[in-house]
Image (cartoon, helix red, strand yellow):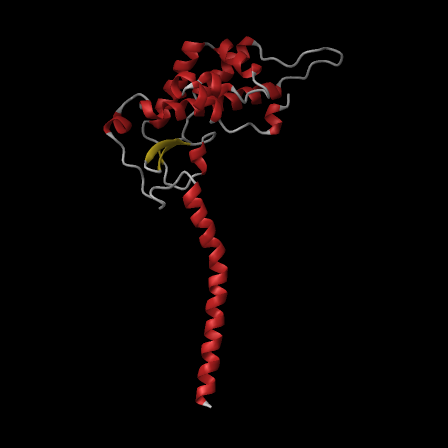
Length: 217
């Protein structure tokens, strides 16, 4: 009798173990795939430690050269967002008239000035696959597993770099590049970031496309 009870208990235990393994296997498989395919990998493992910054990354007033491509693409994304929202607020052309809504010069200047003068607090740096990457809205690293180090000098560096672009390229030229893209706004990084990223990389790894409501004008 005792032997039968022990056999029954062992059988129940085995079935329970099998059920737990079946539940965990999909999660383990998904985690393994993310570790293999995602940006947040380093030798097949995920790291959740804050990045260790070099002297330049931690103390320089300027954006480090190896992060200027990501920074430029973040700025391009924010310019797209601000310009798209400003155009959305403009009244549609009257019925029977051709053309599309445009921003007056004064509104264009204000829009891009507000873009560059924002806080930039949503951006910081992550270490992914052994490399430092800027992370935040419009950048691939935002969705990658890893600890982001924000604050510090990163917001000021983006603000400074954005204003430098306005001064060098001009608001009208930036707006013309924004409007000439098809659909509107989605090719700004390819034009804006040629120097910092290289034309090919900027075109292939453009900022996250705008939503339909931002691109239909």
